[in-house]
Image (cartoon, rainbow, N blue to C red; front, side, top):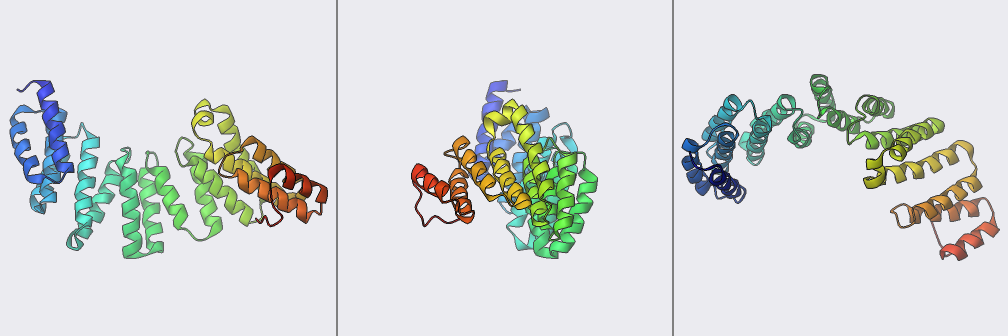
Length: 307
């Protein structure tokens, strides 16, 4: 056996050769590593070989090595998932192999739903399904996939993709609310809240929109991590809540004041400039010319300001 440090260094070079598309060199390195590796290191070599053969267009060899990874590397699902995904990527580049690509992408999503790469596989898979079978067929297929992976990490991504494809607003709302209620730990939770609020406002359910937006706001206000690092969704929720309250009450002056407060609290943010413009125009609509002039002078707005 070679020293561990030497093996790791060679594995790094091997991975670099595959990434650089120097597939022949990669295979030469791999042959020297096989007798000296075991466990995870051997699985990494097998994976690199599978991808190198695919890069050379030797798909029979690539599939054979991939099957070896799947049979011998069960303790390393991340390596297995990546291998299948990469072979699928090569298949997507060849029209003759696209049917294999779809099957392999589905294998990643269903077989390795807790691996991060399953989310990437899902994106490619859904695009392929829409292109080949249309939106309605894809919705049905994604619903079937969700039922099989609903306790996994990729489940909320399946729901989100499904929801975005659905045209009926009420049905889309049901899907987004299901994501909100059942996948609170997902990185898509905020997006599902915001999408739900948008739909509720379209449906005229303004107070329901306010209520669900406040759920997001409360979560961000009580989470140190979210307060510190993720302000986009919080600011958007605050902004949308003002609009929802305006639509519910018709109180233009009250909404204008709320937009002014938003501008002061989030000055410099993406939405702040829109908030002060909305305040200006709402004061105009309410014929509150004193406030119009105050806002114009204080914030340097011209009379041509539009929504």
